[in-house]
Amino acid sequence: MKIKWKRLLLTLLVFLVMALSSCDKTNAAMLFEATFDDAAALAVWSASAGGRAEVVQGHLKLQSISDCFVFESLESFEVKANRVYYLSYLGKIVPFQIGDPTFCTSFLILKVVQNGRTLVSESFGGAPDWAAKGFSFQVTDSAPIQIRFEVGSYRGVWIDDVQLVQQ
Image (tube, rainbow, N blue to C red; front, side, top):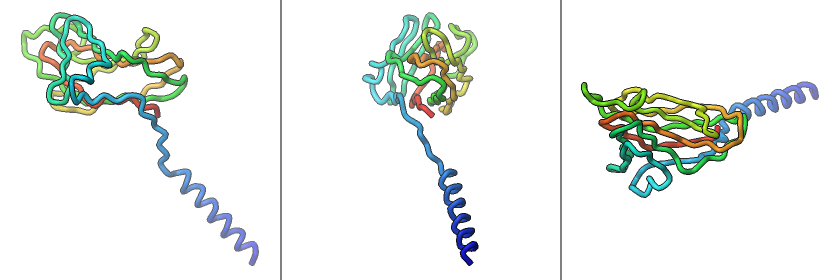
């Protein structure tokens, strides 16, 4: 009789351990978030010559006027070597018209830069309606990273809800 109770207790203990270990434990830590609710949100970004950045109705509009326009975070984000991070944002591109100049290899490219070296370079594509984009990447170095948007669209691209999260 004692053996059955021990076996039942052991089975119950194993079941509880398995159930608890399978629970979703998100250790994600938000490192950066930009919502562009007003023009003050532009203060943590730098913009190169050749384009324009403005907040319109709570969204960021980036437009290339005479060159590949670079819009990047002033702040560098501390990361830990060999960790995985997730960068996400919402975006849309004003449709291209025949005859429009293009100044970059794509209408919108999002880059993650560390020590002047590009770790990730992701093209947005050509979505004319709001679309969520994101990607995971792993850093091998503990040097800080920056977020950079490169815009080649003369008609403009729209960005919102930029988030950098440690997984």
